[in-house]
Amino acid sequence: MARRKKKPKNSNGKKLNSQSRFIELKIEKHTAYIKLVVEIFKCINLLLIELKLDNRLIPIIKAFLS
Image (tube, rainbow, N blue to C red):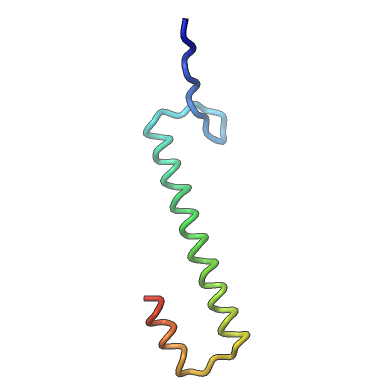
């Protein structure tokens, strides 16, 4: 007799159906993107502080980011 596959569990230990698992993966993906964007802006802010860029370069950097 073949064994049945165990359903994945969320952090609470409850079994998830496929739609719940899909939604949880989407949330994790968006959370990762948000963290990445925050880290990028932290790095840019540090560069601006460390290099003390003059006002002519700031609009160029903003245009590059948008």
